[in-house]
Each structure stands twice: as C-alpha cells, then as structure tokens.
Amino acid sequence: MLIDISSVLLNIIVAIALLWLVVLFIAIVTLSRRRDMATPVKIFWAAIIFFAPVAGLILYFVFGFRKKDHRIKRY
Image 1 (cartoon, rainbow, N blue to C red):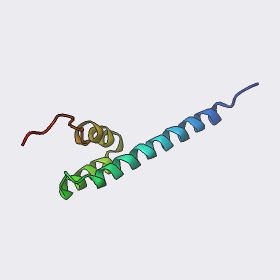
Image 2 (cartoon, helix red, strand yellow; image 1 turned 135 degrees about the horizontal axis):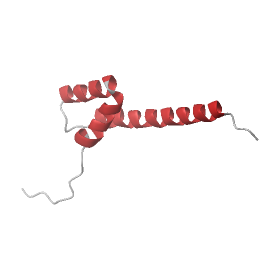
Image 3 (cartoon, helix red, strand yellow; image 1 turned 90 degrees about the vertical axis):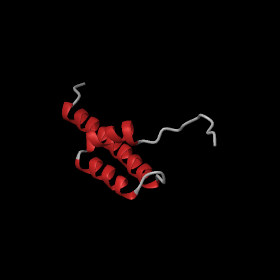
C-alpha cells in the first residue's frame, strides 16, 4: 500500500500548528494574569511574542516566565 506523502506532511504541519497555537495561548494567558509585572512590560512581551513568534515565545519562557522560589522568605 502506497502512502501519499503530501497527506502525511499535511497532517504533521497541522499537528505542529495546533501545538504552536496551544503554546501561544498559554503564553498570552500567563502573561495577562501576572500581577508582578507592570502593564508596559506586559505590552512589551506581547509585542515580542506577536512580532517574532518563535523567538518571542522562546525568550518569554526562558527570561520572562516567573520561576517559583521555594525558599522561605525572611522578613
């Protein structure tokens, strides 16, 4: 049985696009819910994610994403 390669490639592209949209949605929702970030900074990150989607998402998840600090805070 011969598999149509264009059908396989189309399915792969659709799967990657759906995964990309899910990651983009998570980034935008996470960004909009952050309370520790000022509004201009949120707008800056949203612009980077919008105008440079691949690099913007990678940069946001590496540098802008809040990392939870599990240490006990002393006052």
